[in-house]
Amino acid sequence: MLTKVYGSAVFGVEATTITVEVNIDKGIGYHLVGLPDNAIKESNYRIAAALQNNGYKIPGKKITINMAPADLRKEGSAYDLTLALGILAASNQIKSESIEKYIIMGELSLDGSLQPIKGALPIAIKAKEEGFKGFILPNENAREAAIVDDLEVYGIDNIKEVMDFFDKGTPLHQTIIDTKEEFYKSLDFPEFDFSDVKGQESIKRCMEIAAAGGHNIILIGPPGAGKTMLAKRLPSILPPMTLHEALETTKIHSVVGKIKNMGLMNQRPFRSPHHTISDVALVGGGAYPQPGEISLSHNGVLFLDELPEFKRGVLEVMRQPLEDREVTISRARFTVTYPSSFMLVASMNPSPGGYFNDPDAPVTSSPAEMQRYLSKISGPLLDRIDIHIEVTPVPFEKLSEERKGEGSVEIRKRVTAAREIQTQRFADMENVHYNAQMNTKQIRKYCKMDDPSKELLKNAMERLNLSARAYDRILKVARTIADLENATDVSGNHIGEAIQYRSLDREGWLG
Image 1 (cartoon, rainbow, N blue to C red):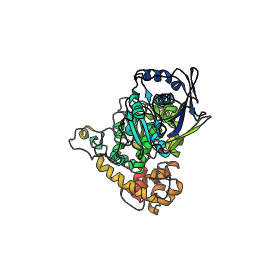
Image 2 (image 1 turned 45 degrees about the vertical axis):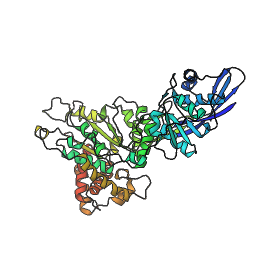
Image 3 (image 1 turned 180 degrees about the vertical axis):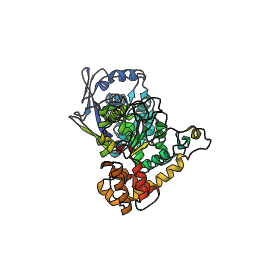
Image 4 (image 1 turned 90 degrees about the horizontal axis):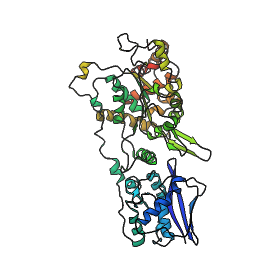
């Protein structure tokens, strides 16, 4: 007898429905075709033990299983449950009238219990698109799949529950989530708060500007100045994610199996990879492509601590994703694209010893050593970082103050107001949502300067030897400063403040 059961495969961040056809005929043998990988080929051992331990068995006949489309590579152990139910239905051990209405996925343990799978959210979205009635999957993944409306999601702990559901009509427990309620859970109590930071008012101001315009930022300072502490608090002042952003971010994290029991992500991601990371782990890829750190930080923050310690090749592969806000991974047989619209926050010491060119510093480095250290970071990469800021150590008087600094919630209100101005400004543009994404044409249109401002910028560029690349960056940052003040035009004050944030463009800044 021939039976069809439906599963799903994830490529990139999209799912493709897989039809599992099971045919049982006279003879003996177990044939699994349709480009399965080793994990799927081994499934018959897991299935045999799981069925045996739950009072069923694999029939001693010729079993042929085809996973269509047959030319698409299938991978992972998530098809165990699909194959097991196909075998039971084809051998008439359970009724199969309604089995084709469901997408069924799950990895089996030998006792019949289910292990979580990856990519439950993209699979659920595809199931709804293709008109399936429901999605049966492991309990740990039920909340993320239930984000999708108009699809019955059943989280199960053991294969016995599904057998009884199809064979005896025993109802399964449906997982229902109110997506809007899940999304609007309280966001006003961030784990890391700016009120913890003593002193550093100018750096906090810098962080506020970076968050308001989505600007990439680099913090330069000696050890213990607070660079990492400040960077970790940046997500707490970013505006809350929109529902669309939350779904997009959850989808990427679902593909790598990081959502379990969470449901919808309502906090912006903060990723901080170690400097020994490989280029594939950073941008994504591999034999079976997976999203890298830059995609996992989509709609959030990617923090690269000790930037010059990263391998140069690893940093260079980031240049294109920073510009295009997506990364495309090409293989001979297929191409996948992952979104990667993130804020880059980098930190570094000014020298190998960790201190500025200061005779009183515990460890001093010669100007030549410092220059060699800084030259590990290429000009084109620095070109994509809008704000450079020097972080100085906090004096004891500030550290021992009882008074608390301004909290993240107050700062976030100002940032959100500035972002709303930008959202209205770029409402007609598809790929531009905030100031950092403006191209040259839009900079000319929205960053008009009066004559005194032009004169100020001209003098600054000549006196500080600022490079041509700094010109557009200064205007973008000035536009954000104006938005924070709710000003229509960019004035000399805004330009003046923006010029201060280009330390690394100044020749001889180390001296």
